[in-house]
Length: 311
Image 1 (cartoon, rainbow, N blue to C red):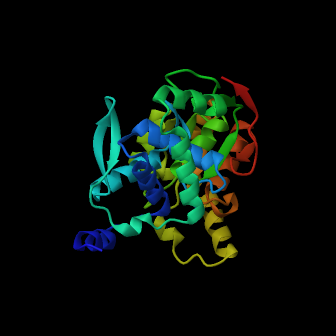
Image 2: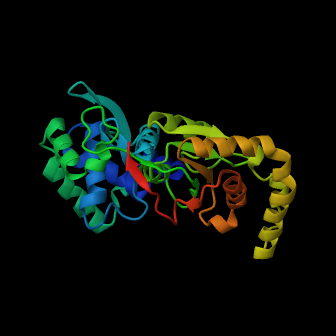
């Protein structure tokens, strides 16, 4: 391994899903447009036995069909770390493999390597228009935000007090799920909306939701102060914390609760926090209070189907 390769590998760990992107660009033998690589990765996830491997990219409907915010974020990382370079192909933004790449990047599971190769072999000679036609016809849901043509409509849920926790989900999976469930507004009830995982910091989440016509509002006053979350060891500790939240904090936040009640009654909205299990999150106690004010049922997105109409 070259000194450059050693230094690069020490400062940047390349994940299998990123290796897959690099491998597909390498197999193409030419610069690959952003649209092409996104669609190839999507087809790898949806039409091959490996599905791209564990922790592969999730996708959502966007301007040109299936898209992954996380994929573009990580591709930018690959450019910054010298594995890919930005270029143009047929007048479109594209990526190409860098001249010097650590050989260890090529170490991918055999099944994933074979599936990626089959996808590239199948689609590398197709025009962008042919690729779009194939993906659109096979996966119409992902055209619901398309600026080219829509073969599916975004549904609209009936109003309820919806809740969701993003734990163990990518931001693309979260946003795709909310759109599929007919949600049009995200109500963030985290006290401190910061996160190490891409997409869940308030500023990033605000930007991403705006790109797919999801409203975003934040009520930090309805979160639980971090000092009250210290030393939570048992179910009883959590129950005591949530009891205090219900009996002490929420009565002092009546204006905010009333505003949330208005928002969830106005259009299908979801109370967002981190914990996947609604029983382990304060949003469930908030939802119960909002439900009592609005008469709307409580539904957790990860555990209940929304009643939908087509918008």
